[in-house]
Length: 160
Image 1: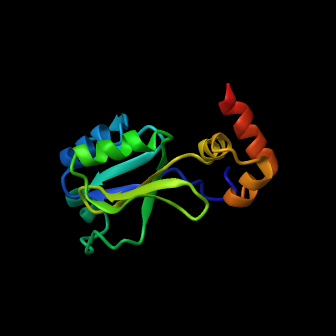
Image 2 (image 1 turned 90 degrees about the vertical axis):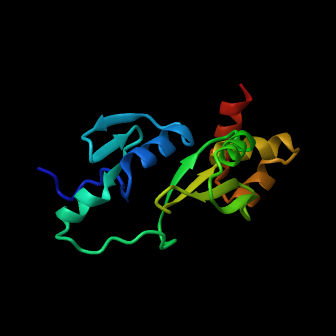
């Protein structure tokens, strides 16, 4: 018996399942692992649910989109290539690719149902990139706010 509820995955409600599925498979290169028709789950455990079906499950309560109050986050270290993919697919950006104050490169954009998606380089890759730029471990710790052991581990992992 579980002592507390177990979190499984976020579920995004979408107006058009095929349009949403194509977006996630094409732009974010996600793979569907379970397909129930009105509900699908991707590797990494996030799901899409068709709005017309989901509305029935919540007793017809109003479903709105585009509140800019929630995002799902992915990591990808080849940010320039990913940014180019967004441009090639005419994806609507929340903002262009930029560096956060801790120097991590990120881009935020909307999926077809106006859910915010963020893609950022991993913190490991950021540490490695800063090292390549000539920063010492102590400076990388200060910039990224990551502990020294994390920085050292990232450098050892990615130097290979």
